[in-house]
Length: 303
Image (cartoon, rainbow, N blue to C red):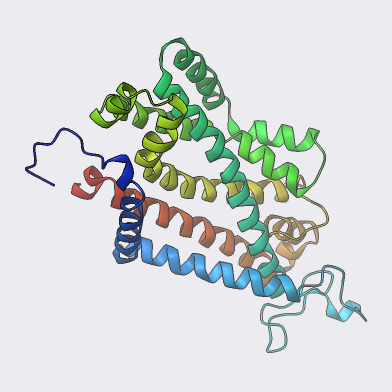
């Protein structure tokens, strides 16, 4: 494509269905060849398998026949990571926590990306006073400290996993909206967009068919990074006692470790594994997000 003087860098509308598939496969291959991306993908695959396997084997109530001797059993062949203060397997709780963290992270990110993409694309494409108003609201959300707002909303609203997902999602859309809007501003005056306007194509159709595919890369990269932040936020809420009390998550495991005195008694297997899992999952999403940004942004690859 270099050296060609054609003014339109985008394919005709009839070819739009072929190009995304080729680009998507090429991006995935480059992501796998990227060292950071490969490590992140392997970690994510582990968490997906581990979370799915642990979900079906986990028992939330204390095991049948629970005795005092079952409390805080150290790691052994029977219990790979020992037991907690209620005699429950730490290994199985970690597996369920993986599923909870992935579910919250992905669902909250989906909400944030949906709102942010809609706001960023429409604001950048329409422009004018609508753009000023939309970005004014966006800047307001950006300037408000996110974590205190999330804690207040989670404390006021009903307790439960859906509440946590919605709260994290609706407080995380502003930054993606800003980034997507900046990309749309660079796209809307390009020849293929002007051509679509000239033939009478509706604005909604242009945004869906031409603008969105051209900003999909930055949307995906930011979605992955947002998932890491959502996982960490859910752990913080659970640690503060604002999570779903009926579910075991990594943050709740940390809270139980502190409240049961495991930290002062030296029962490391109750404290270290959930903290390590949170770190590794956040690291996995961060590595994949940064690697994807390197792949789709030639300016970063050149640095």
